Image (tube, rainbow, N blue to C red; front, side, top):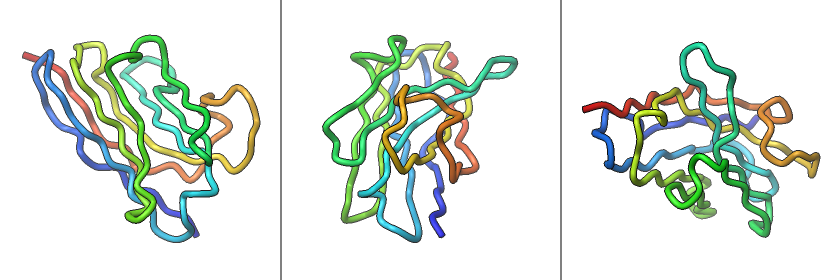
Length: 125
């Protein structure tokens, strides 16, 4: 059974960077669409970035375009989210999850499953 574990969160100053990891155990992630999502206190969970199973389609939320990059490492069965130029409004718990299919919209959280436990990202001076 596929299990996902997020790591890499922490406290960082505005303008700083972090790299989140989503490590999978069980089946290969190659056949899955992968998504990074976040949820801030009092707010709905939102899609941050998602990548199709063959990497030919990538979604970024407008709020993170040009700052965040999603990538896969098939050998490590891991997906990363490189976050640069972090802003206070990026503060949230970040989750990864998978979707086995092509349902649209691509990066809506309620189409995803096998959620990890999340990793806290706090951007503060």
